[in-house]
Every structure is written in structure tokens, then in C-alpha cells.
Length: 116
Image (tube, rainbow, N blue to C red):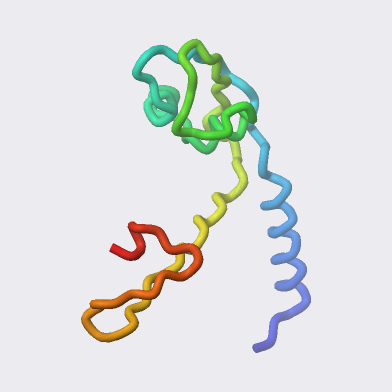
């Protein structure tokens, strides 16, 4: 396959621009104080942003499933560009020792969920 120099240069420029855009438009437009029953998903919907955008501008949120009552959360501009999501780690898969899975040999990394 043959690519012209201009195509390669254009692709390189676009890749650099895309990488540079992470974090752009992430100005804080408002703040929100967490009340009982709130979730980041609900807050994101209310402000027309994503959970990823909220987490990006709030480095103190280490677990998006756990926010504290009274916690003050910064809400970014809805155009905020966040880094791409990291893929979830691959879980080990179970392997049957003989057909029908009557017997199973437990290996490192197995959990009851994988084996069951």
C-alpha cells in the first residue's frame, strides 16, 4: 500500500492535534453540592455533561461510584475533552478439564464468578 507524503503528514498533524485537545474547554462552569441520593450519573444528566468529564475536572473523585454527602463537585463546560477511556482488564477464563465440566482445576486469578 502506498501513501503520499502529504497524506502521512496530514495524518501526523491530525494525531498531534487530537492529542493536544485533551483537556480543552474544561473550564468550570458551576459547582454542585452533593445531597442524599445523588449519583454522578444523575448530576451529569442534570448538567448535560458526562461522568467522565466530571471525574476529569475533579481529581479528588477516585471512585465514580462513591461520592460523599456535602461534597462540592466542579461541573465543566459540556465541550470538555477528556482522555479516552482505558479498557477494562481482561478476566481469566475458566477451562474444563474434561467434557461436561464435572471437574475443574483452579488456576491463579480464578474467582467464583468465573468458575460458576
